[in-house]
Length: 216
Image (cartoon, rainbow, N blue to C red; front, top):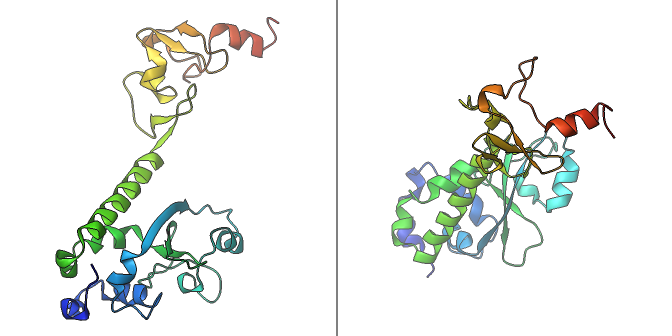
């Protein structure tokens, strides 16, 4: 179901009018920015690294010039907000270019009055996008388990069991942990998890000795 401008009469006083105007600039044949949103798909999320080359990122994701400044120094949401560090990359119909939406804008889109009359499929689409963003945010707060490689270890969290700083709970069973090198289970009580330097022991005794050349 497409939405006519009659349903969007109050958008000029809405703080997200700029976003809907930016969406409409993608395809001015549409009656509103919401109509454009109906035909957009979420592709991926890119977290910018300080070492990233701006032009390489643009080329890799075919980002539209609408979403970066003319100087080529920073990325912008379709609402015009600059200096994006988290890029939510979306496609529109058969356009070769992709477009950027800020996480906050996506989360707030559902709060617009026009969404009350929107197609249920559009609401479902926004819900799925928001869930992706939340999952990505949780991942950024976690690091990989040393043994299984899954992001299940919370960054900066003071676990009572110091072994959990390196290993997820699936790689610790009671007094045993799974060595990340040989994958064998090694007995190590949590009260004995630290070495003399105060660091968590990160491998079994056999692999530790082999690393130092004590055994073949």
